[in-house]
Image (cartoon, rainbow, N blue to C red; front, side, top):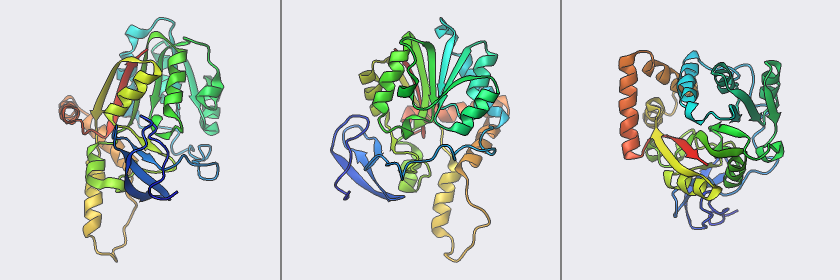
Length: 298
């Protein structure tokens, strides 16, 4: 494809888009209608991310502070508990499954990575290996469906959202997170932002796009908050521009590790937690947080 050729916007299906540049062999565009970022094409079989190789011993576990945060999130789902069934899509290390089980939910999971599925099954969980459409869950099966950092990977996200709406009971809750196309990190670092990483991530949505997609898929009462950013990545971006070209770095910058370290630090005391909440409140007010946190009811 040339710079002027691209798939329709995966959020609003419009064709008009601004070319942003090339990354990892993919042309990147911004939709002129809804502001989403997306690749010119969906990766074919030879380009697609191999999720069987994605998970291993190093990333099938998470820092302890994440469990505490998930306890807060899932603890807030109590008002939706009717059939007592919760589904986590793309459960990865399985921490969401663990916390939900401890809180008394009947837990189900879906994951495309075979190593993650095998680990979950060894731990006694009822999980499905494959895509959502292949799972064939019955209508109105779940009170709550969660999907953390999943929407940016999907070839046809609205189709998957329609399937989620089908298997979520009336009045049930979808909770999910996905990177923002209009967050502060993209505004400052552009295509250098590590989240823009095709063929793994093939679209990032705006708040407007999320509302449009979820409404079209059959959801109502859609709330989207914009929280979080990693200042270390922004600092790394600008400092790399002024380093001598012949300088050899001791180690490669890790967005994930520095993000974990920052979040762990900001949740280590009530005072620091208040600082984090204040920062997130400001980012949400300005709509420039890097992460979209989505609450939508069927």
